[in-house]
Amino acid sequence: MNEAEMRALLVRLAASLFARGFSVGSAGNISVRLSEGGYLITPTNSCLGSLVAERISKLDADFQHVGGDKPSKEVFMHRAFYTGRDDAGAVVHLHSTQATAVSCLPDVDRGNPIPPLTPYFVMRVGRRMPIVEYYRPGDPAMEPAIHAAARDARAVLLANHGPVVSGKTLTDAVYAAEELEEAAKLYLMLRGASPRLLTPGQVDDLLATFG
Ligand code: 13P
Image (cartoon, rainbow, N blue to C red):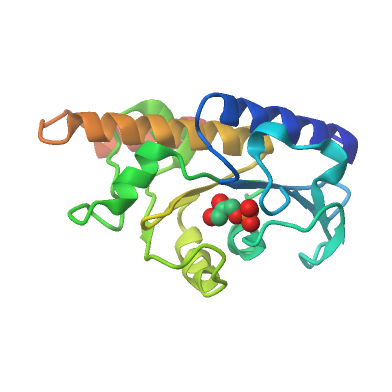
């Protein structure tokens, strides 16, 4: 996919997330690695519902701003995934309600708060998704913490803030962010019940088959 096509896809997927309430106001940011080199990232304070393709920020391979509007103040959050994971081709950060709710709970397993409830959560988000401690939005101090967590997790939950999800492609990262929100919803619905979880063998089978 060339840069113009990627800009158009980013506008379309971001608008879809916004239309379905995964993001409100100017919350969230999305980036994607370009096959020609460098990255696209949503501009700071932009609304995911009304991005303009030509105004999406462009970064060079060193994450320096080289085109479009001023980039998200959380470029470093995205960089933490790209430098931490060879398989990261896109990163989606949302403040989606149910995942953010889980990030606020004090009594969850901070190494992996949402258990393997469904196959698609495991297939898209992976074996584990740790909570990264709270930092002020835009605080670059969160980069090393995310980088360390991202080494063995495709996604993290920022405490009292929201999810950051990587994927091989932009579409993969968006789908993973959606599955994460649905899994968070199920987890919250089932809190207090004792749901049957996928077994470790079933999780291994899913990751071996769908990776
Ligand atoms: P930006 O508008 O700078 O991308 O920040 C939005 C956000 O989601 C902060 O966490």
